Length: 200
Length: 101
Image 1 (cartoon, rainbow over the protein chains, first blue to last red):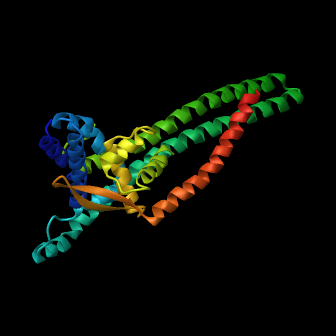
Image 2: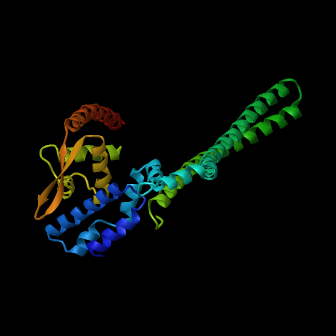
Image 3: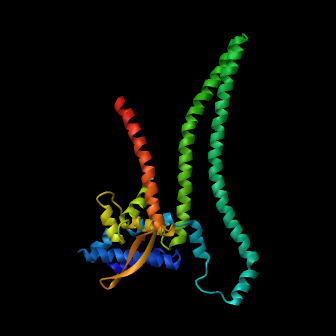
């Protein structure tokens, strides 16, 4: 890939960044390519050394806050005319609820993710409590002379204990998975805001 | 942890004299490999934290950005060295336990 191709491809991917920041990024990579070429590389080699554009974009994405991306997306590219401002104010009864709805959807997705995790742990905790009660209750029945009921309660308690331990592992995996899902959603949203082409 | 360490490495690379992107990567290479795409966000972060300043200077008919460490940057390196002393003594303690086994 030539330097010009590389830079324009990168530029296309950084549309969601504030203008100045995108410009600085391009300047940086331009300088890098020039320096590599000055040290004896061909243009193609110098571009290849920088690695895939996907990776470059991913690094920038990781370092840019969702808030900044949103801000850039919303901010108009030029100064607004008076009638536009009037329209925005008059139209607020349409866009304000939409904005609130979008924020609410975001928040609810997050809450939903976390409540799944909390629910799993709650089930696990109740199993553990059941196990303890079953075992102690069973012992109490045994000493009270009710051998059959006692064994049944203890057996039940042991079963619950087994389930609780198994589910504890499940909970751990699920929690890790949910955290990853949360990060992935955030990164995906950022990627959507940053450029036209989606980051895989 | 590695991320913070790379920040310090970049500061160390410009500690004695102002340097530019390509040179920083080259100077760090014998100690730690860092790619161009990794260096960029670090430089931005350090600049935002006022640990370094940037100036453009002409080189071979084009502009090149030179990075200069600030007083705060030097201070950051000093803190790192202090902290690291403690970590080294912890490391020695940990490895001593292991060799006893």
